[in-house]
Image (cartoon, rainbow, N blue to C red; front, side, top):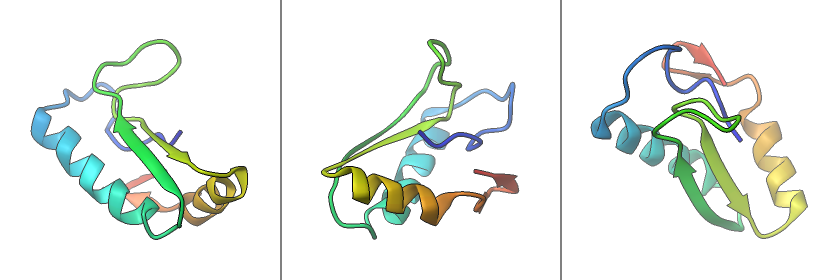
Length: 79
């Protein structure tokens, strides 16, 4: 789970969701094994609006993605 993609309290348009999805697909696909990716469009159940979930083939690939993106800045906010 990646969070911090959308300013807290901001409305998310389809354009915002698609932009986040495209950007994060580009970042995460650099790591082999990306199986799927999705953007939470409505908050709730422990994931705020704008969070990104990426699924990788192995735990090792998932850990690499987490290390690569930890602390990275996206649209002036830290992931």
